[in-house]
Image (tube, rainbow over all chains, first blue to last red; front, side, top):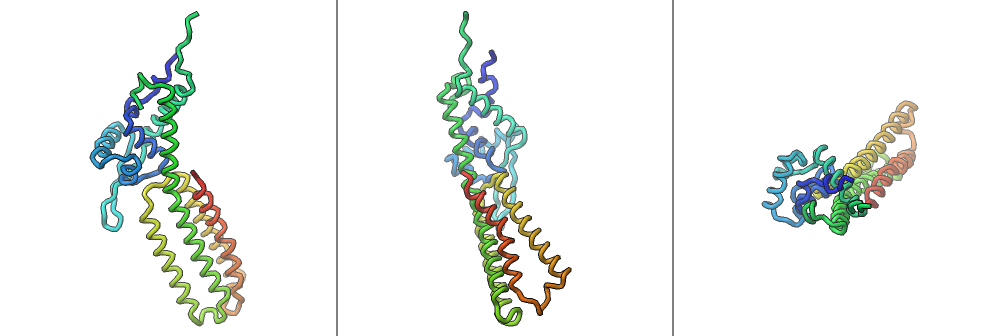
Length: 105
Length: 150
């Protein structure tokens, strides 16, 4: 029996990265400040985790201006969304107790 | 949440609960879209009332009132728009579908009125108000659906 933890994504094992991706999974786009406020981390912590997610191809960063003020928007890539869904499915299996090893007869 | 090798069933359930909480936070932000639809509906309803009940249609302050109401609606829309910090795909789809249905109805009514000669200075204007009542239905449905998502 393959343990569902094998489908867990290592990158999403980090609590802040998991929170960020969970937020972005529900959003088409979210502003950097929105993510920072809801995940309750500092700008620098979020920037660092965003870089890791962006480097892995999970997140896309969009920069623009609103009323001549710079604004950064974040969104999940297709790959990021697929990885997150797979991660959630694995979590669901573990939560349902499917991770129990088979007893030797 | 621990790294995967030590992840317990309880920790997995906590992570799943958190994913649900995060989604709800985005849906709450979507409600700004709902307010934008309501602003458009309210402004259009007000314009429809002025156009329908103005005793001197096109001659008195009706035109100015319509312009002021549209300016207020645009201002309110901009203020609400600037407050949008996140939106979901479903919220976006409902928002634009409502606006498209609203515009299609208006284009249809305008086209039919011109084609049939009903839209002329000598004609009664109450039909405009009736059309407005129908036109705002998709806006209200969109606002309701977006606003009720949790």
